[in-house]
Length: 459
Image (cartoon, helix red, strand yellow):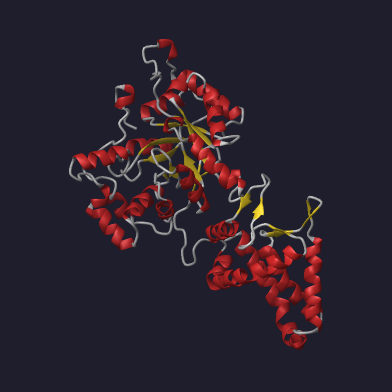
């Protein structure tokens, strides 16, 4: 009989654990689990004496070994989704568990509502957060989060999704480049909801406040925690005199207390708003110690560079106290900066690729003016690889970058396209195929810095 009781309790306990993220018992403002426990205890005691009693003999024979094992797999499935046993369970039974839960959820919700339990996310009942604002899409958010955690059945990553920086921080290998994209609030919200964790922005982009609005929305709704996100900001050249003031202004707009990475946007001491003001120009020898103080004060976890070439990095490395963790540059098959990549690999400085698909505004203008010339999606090699791996042309190029350990930040205003961009880790090209994308006998830097500084910085 004890075995029968254990079986009943485990079955109902599964429901409680699976439903627990959605339903919480609250009394006096404090979470209380014991009413739910006694509810489950009462149900299985009733079943013990009635409906399931004839199954006693069978259940006694199987439940002793089976249910502890299933329970262990169940927890692995929820909390450690990449474990092989959990993936197997998900592939075999995940769909059926989700279907059963979708049918049980409204019934459980109505009962809990009847007994006064606060519903934290049922499909047909809305609730209010700390700010007393109604949230109507929590069930959708929860399902999306669980699906992203478990990964899609049948798919397995063959390329890691995380780059370990030289200060020990983990950085996602795929992110959203936010320069010149529209509908930014919805894009940030939708992309993070679909699993994206890295957002790249800058003062110069003029969208920090909108990105902050999207971040606040996902954080308030509990879709992610702050520590799960990786947010990059940049110090504009006009603000190099006071990086602390600049980053605090950025944090205020982003509704954040700290950044994960703050970059010196351009290796130039020229103050663009007043280029003739010699006193207003700031060299890297003056700027970098101020950047290092931002880490000391907890305003950013890491600092790095943007658009630095090898010479600029050598200059910085000759005196810095805190080594840059990353260098964000234009990088794609038409602008394959091998010397820079080799140097950064040697110094353990992560490369971040903007314009990774050679499709930024500068590229679009060039392609249009030159009758489609240097359109990476029209290259025969890319077309052939796309057909071979059953991936889009964009996915081929992004995979080529992350397979080299390069963080890639494609920009798009289409959340579906961003979801497609993230689906690049389940295949790996051969070394010969990787090399075929490195050199086309063509070279083009689409982001022209001459308009800023009067000279080109080839990085």
